[in-house]
Amino acid sequence: MKKDKRDRSISNRIVRSWTLRTAFVLFDADIALIVLMRLGRMERLSWVSWAILAGVELLSLLFARRAARKKVRRYIEPMERMALTAHEISSAGFDQQKLKQLENAIGTLKPTNPGVKLKTGDQELRGLEEAINDLLSRMNESIQERGRFVSDASHELRTPISVIQGYADMLQRWGKSDEKVLDEGIAAIQSESAHMKKLIEQLLFLARGDAGRNQMNIGDVDLSALLNEVCDESRMICPDRDWKLDADQPVPARGDADMLKQTMRILVDNAVKYTQPGARITLRARFKEGLPCFEVQDNGIGIPEADLPHVFDRFFRADPARTRSTGGTGLGLSIAQWIVEKHNGYFDVFSREDIGTRIGVILPG
Image (tube, rainbow, N blue to C red; front, side, top):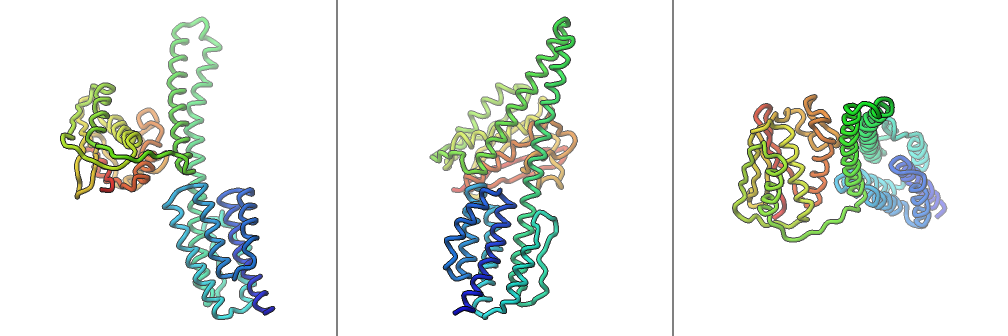
C-alpha cells in the first residue's frame, strides 16, 4: 500500500510539473495558478487517471483562450500517447528510481528553446519520451508563431504612426503659413489614420475569433444572391475593372450571410489590388462536386507556386510588388480563412504568375 502511494505521488508530481510548465509557457502565471488549484482536487485519483485529467484540464484552457480547433487537435495526440504510456508503466509496476529520473529530466526542460528534447536513454520510457518531445515541438512552434504575429503587428502599426508623427511635425513648422504643405499633411494623416483603423479592426476581429467571441448567425443563404450584391458594390467602387458575374442560378447553402459576404469582399478586394485597370474579374456561384461554392477569378499578376501554402498566413505578402500601398494590411485572407473554417468549408486556390488567380470557397452541402 505504501509503495502504491509513493508511486502515485511521484507520478502525480511528474504530470503536475509538466502541466504547470505548459500553462506558464502558453499563458501566464494567473492561468498556471488556476491549473494548480484544479490539479489539487485530483490528488486522490490513480496517477493514470490523473495524467489524463490533467491533459483535459490544460486542453479546456486552450479551448477557452484560443478557440482554435486545429491547434487543439494537434495537442490532443501527444497527451493521449502520454496517458497510454503512463497506463502501461503503471500496469507493469515501473521502477521508482526511473520515475524519479524522468521527473528530474522533465524539470530541466525549457519549451521556449528551439529544438529542446527529452532524452532519458531508457527504452522503457521511449514511448513517453517521444510523446513529450512531440508536445514540446508543437509548443515551440506555437510560441514562435505568436512571437511572429506580435512582431508583425507592431511593425504594421509603427509605420502609420511614424508617418502621422512626421506630418504632424511638418505641419507644426510650416503648415500654418504654407497652404500646400497643410493640404498634403492633412491628406497623409487621413490616409494613414484610415489604414491604422482598418488594421486595428482586423486585429480585433482575429483576436475575438481566437477567443471564441465572434458571434455566428447561421441560416439559409443563397450564394448567388450574395455574390450579386457584392458585384454591384464592386462595379460602383471600381468601375475601371471589367466585371463579369456568373451567378444566374440559386446556390443555397447554410451559413452566416454577413460573414460570407465579408469573405467575398476580401477576395474581390485582393483581385482588384493585383489586376490592372480594364482587366477582367469574374465572380461565380455554382455547385462543385455537389457542394455549394463561390469563386473570384482574375487575370492579374498571380502568386508564385512556392508562396501558395502561405497566402492565408497573417501579414504574409507573396512578393515585393505586394507592398503596403497595394497589399492592404496582410490580414484579409486570414480573416477569410477564419470565416470559412467556422463554416466547416475549405478553399480551392489556383494561380499562375502573370496569368491570374482563382480562389474558390466550398461549403458543406
